Image (cartoon, rainbow, N blue to C red):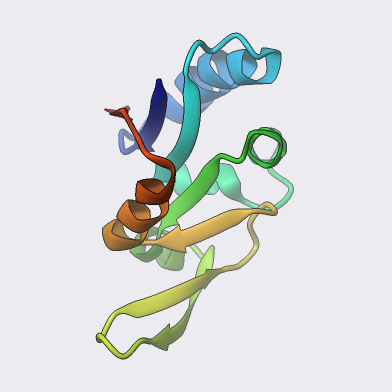
Length: 127
């Protein structure tokens, strides 16, 4: 089964649920599902800051397992983790990640749909 996680809940979700539960299973290869993407909202975007220990662990696992790591563009921009890049011919703004771990991307829902549509997703889990 291919799953994607959306981290939308503030509080201890990132440290506790991702850092202490999901990520150790991914690192050990015991998660039980093929995680193909993770999308981060609000302060959860800070997990992918450059030099963040949790973010580096995520980047390592994502690179090894080809997991999409995407930050909400508006959330990341407001937190200094993305900068405006350009507006395309359809009027959509595009952003580039800054001060993030290697492999982190920035986008909005259409970007997420496009990226995950290519790999196929059986279930999206919002935490």
